[in-house]
Length: 180
Image (cartoon, rainbow, N blue to C red; front, side, top):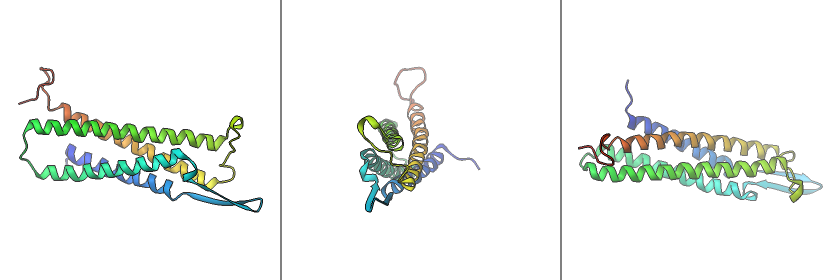
């Protein structure tokens, strides 16, 4: 059984959607309450701004990949467009795929940096360590960051496929001329 590049891209996009939704769910549903000196303290993703941003970024990236998956299945059944219009769409897909990869990767890195501060604390700023009190919260955030970085790697491969699909339309001998 031979898989075409469109089917491989669809499988990778589907896997990316699953990883992004898993990341968003792990972040969004994460909270832990502890009683410290007769006072209930709650740790939630809303306490860390980078996690709120990552939740929005991963949700939008999952929606974008779902939209691309639906559009690619629709365009596979429609064969009536010219090479010029297909090149414009390939450029748009390439640029959007690159932007989404960078946004998700940057969001994951910002959340990772913020999580390190929560893990280690910072005495100069009087930030306390959370992970010795809220272990389940920190473990779940660590799992969500791992899923986010796996999704980033999958989206990098999608962006590579988009680049391949774009640049195979152009002539190898003439600069920026479409193949006829």
